[in-house]
Figure 1 (tube, rainbow, N blue to C red):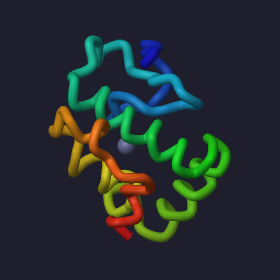
Figure 2 (figure 1 turned 90 degrees about the vertical axis):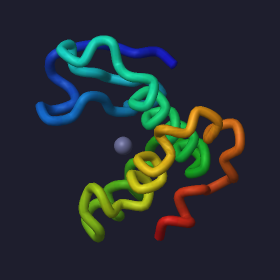
Figure 3 (figure 1 turned 30 degrees about the vertical axis):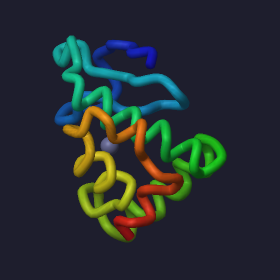
Length: 100
Ligand SMILES: [Zn+2]
């Protein structure tokens, strides 16, 4: 996964974000931890589940408005599995749906 370090995105308080297939990361967070890279990788898999980034972001926005950031099922799947090095190898299709 390509990581682009910068000082604008994501906003302060967040280390990284998945942005159309690239990880954007705050400069002061270099290098990202393996768990953070894995967390963003899970979002990449979720975007593939949603058949692309636009549909992923629309669905993400809907869940964020409805459940907030940490209870958003996309974030719950990513946070609960970011420590598991094998998660992406064994992840089932639409794994985030288990967190609805
Ligand atoms: Zn996330």
